[in-house]
Image (cartoon, rainbow, N blue to C red):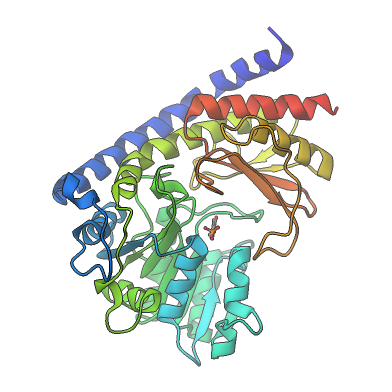
Length: 406
Ligand SMILES: *Cc1c(COP(=O)(O)O)cnc(C)c1O
């Protein structure tokens, strides 16, 4: 066996206990999803496309109900009309905030694409509408205590919590931790709305942060199961979901309108496939963490740690090994394996971003992908992998590409 093969078989053996935990979560989530499908009496007639206003679109309305059951919330709004996850989160923010209100970001500055929504100039940002902004870092002592203090002192109308690490060197948060934060915030200020950016977190555990007023995510990540071609969701308390529908559509008609000529099959099938897709992605991620650690790099979180999102950060320290890793992941993709990723100025991001994404759905990061902003400490964020075997192969190709440069 070659050195790389030896490294991989050792890594895989070490991963056995983590794989066992992932399987348990996969089973529990499959049961949850199957129960929801049964309760919603999903049948083929719900998959058909609709046209025009989309009044009484049963495929659309049942999909909402299905998501609400799976997320453990009162209600949900699942739409291909959400352009991406950022749009779903921004819709939640605009839906729940009014001029003179304060938004508190409780887990550090939110994801890069949301900063212009909150603080941008000449773009209709929340700031321009008269919404204030304050932020508490996640790092440091007694984070829940600091959030409580800020809610008491600043009396925010809404608090934004990000579950996943995003492009930051912070840990992902467990649903239990977020649910506890929601309870603390609501007990200090009952009317305060908690919005959770749930991107990358869905189905990594057996519950979602359902005690938030709204949780939001992208359908080309976890809950779309690699099949949904676009879209986003918001789920949560009925009145908050209603307000989000008025914001996505218009006040008055809200969710009563909105057709989908292409039909809903892939959104239903994607949700069905999501627990498996997430489990394959998690296994790929755990394997990558162990093998890269054995090769001398420092992935975070550790391969044996509990997973609260599907992201693995790998610190490369300089541009070259990071670019080699990204090139290797690209070469292991089913689509565009022959292209060489280059850093580019992606809309909504401050620094050039380099991205390996050879996906069937453009930019779908539930498919094996790796990306990161080209800024110190040159951290690549790895996520996805619809099948463990293809994910594993991608990681091995990336490892070969890095070790070639050494
Ligand atoms: C992906 C992501 C978003 C939304 O990104 P889109 O590219 O707009 O779908 C928001 N927050 C986090 C933490 C994310 O990972």
